Length: 114
Image (cartoon, rainbow, N blue to C red; front, side, top):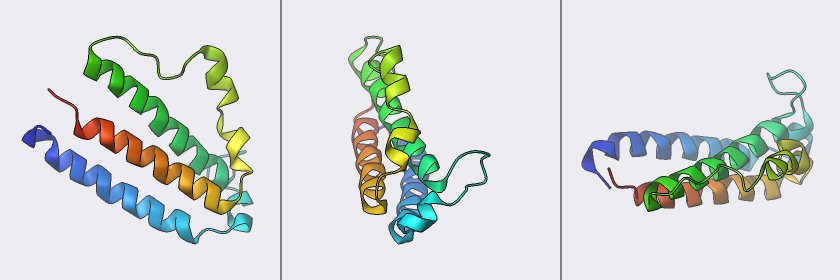
């Protein structure tokens, strides 16, 4: 990784660990509770963060290989991957999804070249 990017990478790691630490202690009832976003549960927010990390990973891969790559495979995929589809999952599944998406995005980011 470019040394100039290390402070940003460290901040992302710290924020990700805080998020995962909180996600690990949230139970199913808490995930179904309303978030501060109107019409969204806490589960929606966590699922949205995971899908957003997946989309950013796709974009970073495109940059890395020097070819345009969409965030989502298709416009239809973006709709079918919306947070609503995974927000109703059990808490452990959502937490694993967030951790997995964050880990894969970090892997691609760590291989980024300026």
